[in-house]
Length: 146
Image 1 (spheres, rainbow, N blue to C red):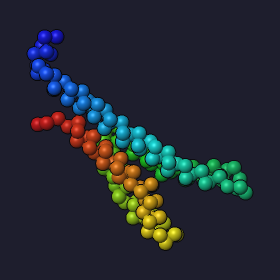
Image 2: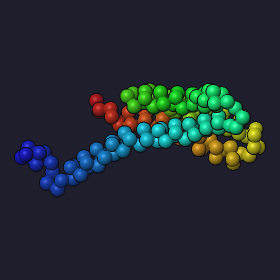
Image 3: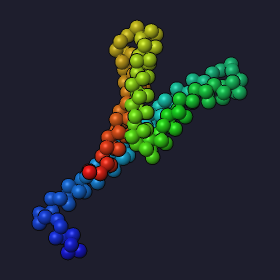
Image 4: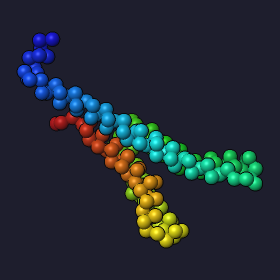
C-alpha cells in the first residue's frame, strides 16, 4: 500500500488521469461494437420487404435470407473486428467508402435529388466508415509506446 502512495504525487493528479484513461479505453472499446450491431440491425430491417402478399412462404423465406446476405457479411466483419480491430476497422472503412458513391448514384437516378441521396448515404453507408475509423483508433490506442 505504501508503494502505491509513494508512486503517486501528493495531490493525486495522476490517479485521476489514470481513471479517465481507463474509462476512455472502455468507451473506445464498446462504442464501435455497439454502433456496428445497431447499423447491422438497421440494414437487416430492409430484408423485411421480402414478405409480400401473393408469394409462397418458400419464396418469401428464400428472398428474406437472400436479402440478409449483406447483414451476414457485416456480422462476419464485426466478428473479425472484435478480435482484430485494425483489420476489421480497415474493412468497415472500405465498406463505407466503396458503397457510398454506389448508393448515392443509385438513389440519385431514382429520385433526382442530391440532398435526398446525400441523406440516404449518411444513414446507410457513412456509419460504417465511422465504425471503421473508431476500430482503427481503438487499435492505435492499445499499442504500447516503444
